[in-house]
Length: 408
Image (cartoon, rainbow, N blue to C red; front, side, top):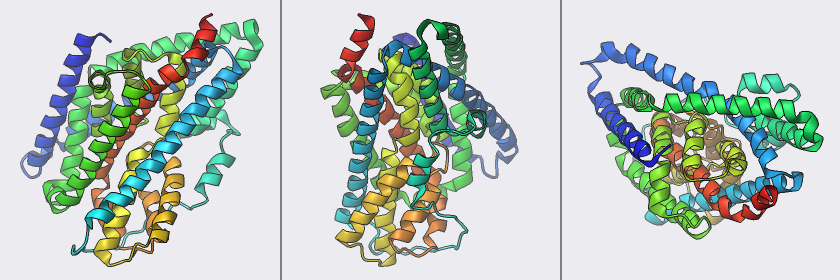
């Protein structure tokens, strides 16, 4: 993707996002008859992206492992990814707890609660995730959309191909061909992204309404400001210091993926576009093929910020004392639960229900949280996708020696 094309597509996506917000605000009552068409186009766009997620992730990862050239180097790439994502998630959780506590957000706010039936994520979900890492039925993992199992299966197959050498060459060639086909299809879908984002965001605004947006404007503004500063300082600093990449160049190249993530609220559905952005940033496939899908699965920095932020906000609003001990428990729980949060719209609701229970908040606050979850989710998904790309850019330098060994 050349710079000129990237800029024009980015401009078109941004325009589609703005027009979609405006259209969603004015659609109720006046243009209700257009809602089925908007939902149809949005659904077609999302399906077109999802169609290529698993072929692209599976084949790109196999090709990437072959490019790394050794099992030990593959382990180092994966290890660096996990270390980075865990560290940034822990820091994000801490920031999300500290800021609203320091600003006393929610104090003096009256919240009308509605009872909702939401099943909380069990705190043992991390153990369940580890237990189910290796799929007993790989086909079921693809059909069921279990990204973590698909990743593990791809790594196992990739390492087996690496060990077999020439004997696995026909299968590796097939994976390379499917990978190229997937990239070609994604490139074509990219040109429809402005329309897809327009319809997706219009539906979101229509469903929530401007009253909901304005009623919780203050906390949403503080939340978005926190995420913006986190993106600028943490991710910008990461690509500048470790990746030796210009901050402006990084954000310009990553903007198509960020805008798509904002409009669709799905880091998993944005994976194909993130891969294209990583290619433009000259991140080797050996790195991006593992870092991006792994990030879409376990890198939930912004989800940690949102959940920590909302826990403190609702605690202050409901008069629940948030002690330092409780903050520590919520911090650890949030970090662990966010790893199991799926990269799909609404994936954080069950995890938030578990955190609210741990913090001793009344169950009625779930009705309020659900009403603004999508509005929080848009910014959070955008932040998470940028974090995946920032990790990839940073690792371009930290694992350069491994790639050189392969090239040599």
